[in-house]
Length: 437
Image (cartoon, rainbow, N blue to C red):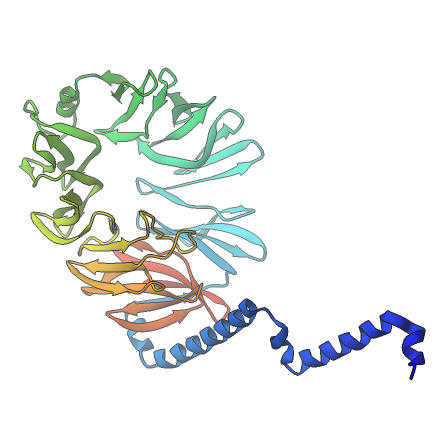
C-alpha cells in the first residue's frame, strides 16, 4: 500500500521522522548508546571525579581546624590572582577585576594595564616591564627606562641584576649578545657575552671574540686572562696561589664566606672558606646553604648524592631527575623523579610522559607517589612537611604531615615572606590570599 504522505513530501519527511526518533532517544538518555567510546568514558570519568571530590569535601570538614591553625584566609573581590611575588618583605601580585588588570604592591595599586604583569624582585626592590607599541617600558625602583624593541630583542627580561642601584640584564642587538646596564650597551666589542653577575660590587660576565673558541671573564670592564688574579680580586676568595680551577659561574657567599665549585686532578669538589669537600665526578649548580651547612648534588659512580655539609643524606640513580628546593632553609627538601627514556615532566601540563616514580624527600626520609599523583609547592611548618596535591586537572588539596586538610578549586604558585608561605586560592567563586600564621 502506497503512503501518499511520504510520496508527496519525499526524503525531507523521512529525515524529520528519523530525527524525531533520534531526539526521543536523546531525551530518554539512550543517546549514550550512539556516542563514541572515548566520549562515554570521559563523561563517566568526570562523574567519578565529581563524586570523589564531594566525598573528600565531606571528609575534610573534620580536619579544617588544623588548616586554620596554620593559615589565615583573606577574602578579596578580585576575579583572578596570579604572579604572587615577595619584594623584600612585601607582597606583590597581579589581579583582575571588571576586565581591568592591576599590579598590586604593598596593598596598593602600582599600575593598571591590559593584561597580567609579572612583578620581579631584584635586590629587594620592585622590577616590572610592559609594552606599548614598539616601546618596552622597564620600571625598577620607581625609575622608568624605555627601550625600542625594533633595536633590542629582549622578550622576557633575562637574568636581571642590580649593581649600585642600577639595573642590568641580557639582550640582543642585531643578532649579537649584549648587556643593557642603566640604559647603556655593554659588550658590543665581543662576539658573545654571558649572563651578567655582580662580584664585589662590579659588573662581571663571560665573553668571547672568536666563535666561542676562547672564553674569558670581563671584570669591571677589564679582560681577565689570569683566572688566579680574578680569584684574588674577589672578596673572601683564596689569596694564595690556587692549586685548583674555579668554576666562576658557581661563585657565591654564605654568611660572608666564599663558596664555589672547584676542580683538581682528583675531581670536582666544593670549597667553602678554607674547607674542601669530598671529590665527585661533577657537582650540580647552584650551591645552597640549608640549615647551617653547604648543600649540593654530587655525581659519583652512577649515583646522584644529596650532600648536606659532610654527610650524604640520600642517593638516586644517575638517570633520575634530582633537585633541591631553594625556598626551604631549615630542612633539606628535594624531589627525585624516575622518568622514561631520559625524559621527564616536572610541569603540570607538559607533553612528556608522566614519571614512573615521583619521590618527595626531607632530610633523607622520603614519600613515594604514584604515576598520576604529584606534590607541588612543598614547605616545612613546625618541622612537618606541607604540600599541595592536584585532584583531576585543577582542584588542589593542602596536605600537612600526611593529612589532607583543605580543598580549593584552583590556586596560584606560592611565594614566601619572612619565611612564611603565601598562596592564592579559589573556592566558592572567591579568591583568597592564604597566609601562613
